[in-house]
Image 1: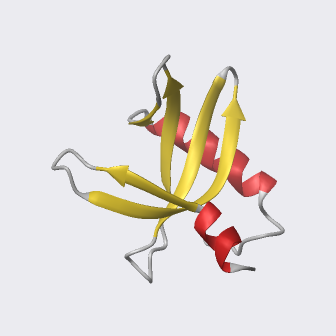
Image 2 (image 1 turned 90 degrees about the vertical axis):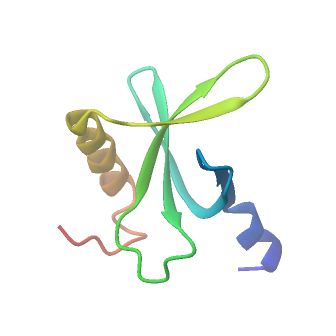
Amino acid sequence: MSENEELDNIVVLTDDEGKDIEFEWLDTVEMGEEQYIVLLPIEDEEAEEVVILKMEADEEQENFIPVEDEEELNEVYDLFKERNKENFDFVD
């Protein structure tokens, strides 16, 4: 993979305290009429948990909202695993 391709997969989000956090974009999953992004934290080399955020767009920008409903989160994660079973080794 070229350096440009690697950079294309990097998403930088700003937390509530104004700190920029880098993630590797793994996938965008659609469930119903909603879209979710699945991210892996870059700073934590041994990260085993992905971050799933709901995408909400307004006229000015895309916003990424934490998913607080555990059932919704599990459904999105299951779809992500099914779509990517050839690309990743999942541990349940």
